[in-house]
Image 1 (tube, rainbow, N blue to C red):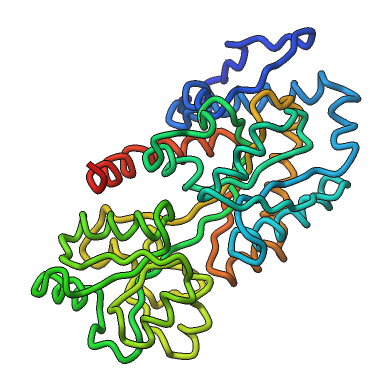
Image 2: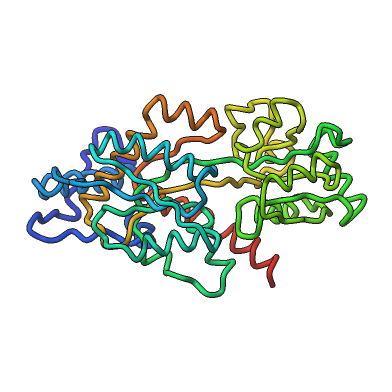
Length: 357
């Protein structure tokens, strides 16, 4: 941080309008856009981005000239799809062109992400990515369908969705400590369900067991509805899952929330404490998402898309709707996507490798 009265020198990397400015693949943002280098570095790149748009002239002003396709690697009607459609609709207002959602389902999101990688890097096809495709899958699958660090360019973060630990209203466990204590007293008898392998709730349970020393047995499910039916039927003891699809059952009293998994409490359920504040300060995880484009997408297109994304997330109707669904809007510059990836990599590498020796 510069001292008072010091003039920032933004001329370290001169900008040449006559040269093609090549956008950086996802991994290279970690070398060029670290926030811990201070505000001077941030301002230098903000100015460079502005000069890129200024020098590209008519080309930047003309983008986009037609509809943009957003590939969502999840089924229609799910949490990711609803979020993508909400944000995409507002982005279309900012861009003056439709943002068309295309659902590509399969392989835990890898089919859709691969489709993004294979499209022309012209800014007209972008992808809705999440922590699974950007972080978890590199440790979960031996064979990779693409190089996540080289084949994608970041646009910006979208939102974070918390996971929540719940029990049925009839459960004897009133607090998180009750549940953990029972699992330690009766190892492998107390159960906790999650979504299927590769999801944030599935690896989140593994992280929970590792950090709390709980002796519970994890049971992955393919569908939230099946988990919920078994929990309410008394066939399993507890459940970790995305909060949004459980809000209705929490409101009508069928479920009791013991903890949310994010660092802070959730605005929609402010009375539910975090795992961290109940004695496990290092526990933090959630299902965050981002928009990405194929590597090689023109920088002026990336800048325009980032601008539209941030404006969409700042729109009162969008931010209010996201928060009503227990999601926190994120946004920010493209570099923040890589910063989030870098933050998550060490944690999930150790957890997943320990669970799959």
